[in-house]
Image 1 (tube, one colour):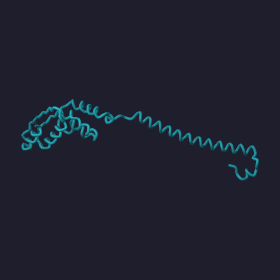
Image 2: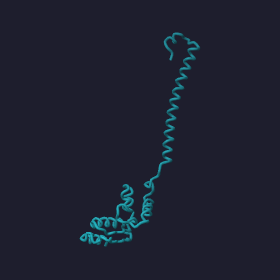
Image 3: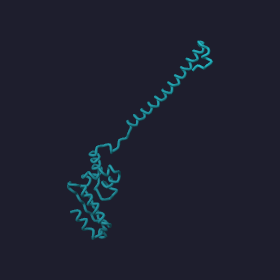
Amino acid sequence: MRTTAQLDEYPPTESQDLATIVEIQRRQLHLLRLENDGLRMQSDHVATRHWRAQTRRLSILDLPVEITAAIFQHCCSDSRPTVAPRDCPLLLLRVCRSWHAIAVSTPGLWSDIDIQLRGGDISALARVVDSWLHRAGALPLTISLEAADNWRRVDAPALPSLLETLQ
């Protein structure tokens, strides 16, 4: 703090002592300001994390599986379940892996099925119906089978496999 010239003038004069004290005080104030800024940044960071934790949106995935399954069943109960991928419950399988796992393991979603025979690949329909019935587990089934006006264009050789699946 003192220069060689100042050390030569020993004992220091009163003005030199005051200048040294002021310089020390100024540096300490600077360090305190830096520390204060650091503490303020830490405080802001903690406040931000606290705010995020308080305002975090809850997801259906935060619920217990049983409640999510009950919600799925309630939502699907408004309509007849068809084998169309855009309808419930098949639609639930396409949302995410978690929803897929919950839907597949909820037999109540699969105990009711509305099969509409239209022109097309009956063997693919038979595979979907087979999976559907396995997912229903031991629950009683309600099966509705409807033939559209163009049912004569149905792949006749594959029809027995569908009927066998339904037995």
